[in-house]
Image (cartoon, rainbow, N blue to C red):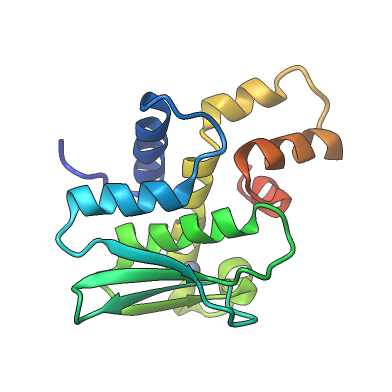
Length: 172
Ligand SMILES: [Zn+2]
């Protein structure tokens, strides 16, 4: 089977892999990123670590010496689910954009404001990938069908998928 080429197809495929292996929600992105890239690619994601740099939610950097990539994240963010989303976003850059650059630095500004034309496209793609990986659409629809949209319902979903309310609002 050839690899997907779009953020949506990648998100759907990896979410399926996770659920087919008998795992439930939330999708634990860290495990998927390490395992799947090691099986599929010669330059896998070799490490996922906190970096302690305020203002940069996540980074993806190539490590030439190891011929692999490192995802790092700000472990001090206070929004629940934010770290899982950040790792998923960086995994999106890895799958979709790593041939274009050797390093990605993503803060709120880059991920949500789409300031520069240059980065708007790839940031949006990484967010779409993260959304489909963390919140498979058929499961999401099952959660919300028959309910009025409320903060309580959104809170339930944020908890189920370990992702941020903001993401649920943006991507749906
Ligand atoms: Zn990004």
